[in-house]
Length: 222
Length: 216
Image 1 (cartoon, rainbow over the protein chains, first blue to last red):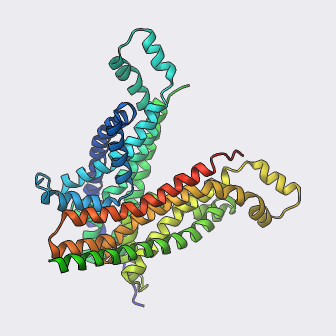
Image 2 (cartoon, rainbow over the protein chains, first blue to last red; image 1 turned 30 degrees about the vertical axis):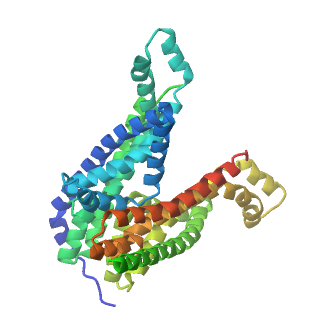
């Protein structure tokens, strides 16, 4: 067995690469969460109040996406969409598209559960003071739904952040790509993956800590 | 051309077989390691619990892809010679075990304390309590999430394509590479994954309904 010689300095030198990779990963996750939430919200309302064919279509979308590997969707967005005539996305945007469609399926379920768990008394109270259907939706159902699902949203964000590691296969320079770059170019294998692991862990726990505070601030008091 | 397509379909099926093999090995290894870790989390002394907790939280806190690359590049650097297949299966098993450990711990934890007290009162030892009282109750709670973990394992096995293990996803890329037929093969591959995973997740839903009547 050949001894492995550690050289942490070399890894430390490329810290900016890791740091900006982490920042890009967070941006990708945030953007996908945002687009996914719009998809999820529309999906949840369509699923709850829409006509039969729309409900069936939404169920099919959710079940299909949840049972297919994300990597397949990422490849499809990057290699498949151009073949279908959609050539407007570069590597970063095709990854955002893939992750958004992926998170949209999970968030549809999250929003649906949220909309379903708004107490009927709230909307009835809205009716009683003469609010229209739209007003009830925007002034009562949505704000309460948002508060109820906040914990699920923050969990989704953390898992999306971990999923951004897949962007490295499209050469998007995020954290995993930085580690792979260091590994391939300097053979600092252990250092590279230790760096990536520690940074993912620290970032994950830091985000969780912040989000838990926000959740407590907006928790529904029953 | 027809010949190429037929060859491609054959390769896809062979890839699917590898995917299923990887998933089966990972499910068995991950469940065994996960069960031990789960018991350690619930019943271990402070030191054992600390180790198990550190393992579970570290693995659950990083992306699977990082774990896979770390095993594939890192273990050989430390002197452990592993093929791509072995490294990938090891990484996925370590990953699955951490998740299954939480399922096991949660399942045992959800059983009321009174069951343990009752078992103690009639003089059962630790392993007897576990085998005769706690586990029969807890397994019904663990089964649905455990089956769902199998879906995650099948989905995770797609990542082994990045190490050059020719499972379904890499088989598809190979086939697309020489037939230049992109969309139909993407669709077919997605359908195969869907068929496998949908079957598993339906089973989980069925089990959940089957055990829904249990209140304890």
